[in-house]
Amino acid sequence: MNGPRLGALLVLVAFVTACSGPGATGSVGAASADAPSMAPTSGASVEAVELTVYGAASLKGALDAVKAAYRMAAPGVTLTIATDASSTLRTQIEQGAPADVFLSADQKNPETLVEKGLADGAAVDFAGNTLTVIVPPANPAGIGRPADLAKPGVKVIAAGADVPITKYTTQVVANLAGLSGYPAGFAASYQANVVSKEDNVKAIVAKIELGEGDAAIVYATDAMASTKVATVPIPPGADVPATYSGVVVKASASTTSAHAFLTWLAGPDGQTVLGTFGFLPPT
Image (tube, rainbow, N blue to C red; front, side, top):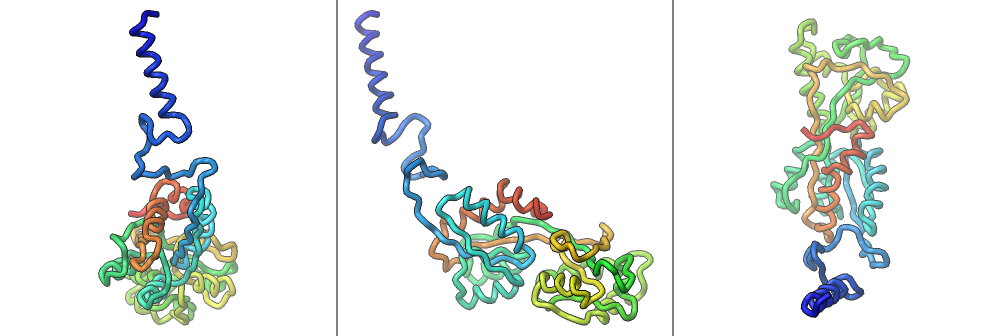
């Protein structure tokens, strides 16, 4: 090998060694100092972050699985989960409850926080759902189709006016009332049969499981999660899509980590976890 070529080769080797050896600060294709790697390298310290996630009651089982999955995806980040009716959780956040992320069963409650300046950034849709009628396994009222919810004497379990499932149910009942074969005054008869208004959808399911009501309209995912109820499908033309949306709470001390979690939940990995519980991609 001639002198010039040998000299050039030695310079190249020295450059590569400097870039790849201990203490190197950069290399071809490496992330910049302003864009740290999402996964820490072996032996690197990981800053511990705890995020408090307020989630709709219908997300309870799914969020337990999300918590475990996210621990693997983001080492060092721990999720603390609290669930209740979306409207109740929104009110608690408005009153200063220490939440980092709010996951609602609708779009209205997160948008309310955005409008009041209590959210850090825009709301993010992260899941979808459908509705179904549930009855006790023995089906004592003989509910064979949604029209039977208006029969005299049927005990319907529902939720309070501000709970998202109530908004969806009201839309479904109005749609059913317009279908051929449904009795005149179906919506009014349905409302007259409501004997209880629960705090959240999990409480509705519990009452049907205990036989304290004859029927209820709930999310399909809640029906799927219970082994103590039977379902009566809602005609496709009458069902309404439920869209779940979330926001990062402005008062959070860890907004960057909170946004990273919400982005993950709405992304492919989060959708995979939610999908195992019957949730759909947001519409």
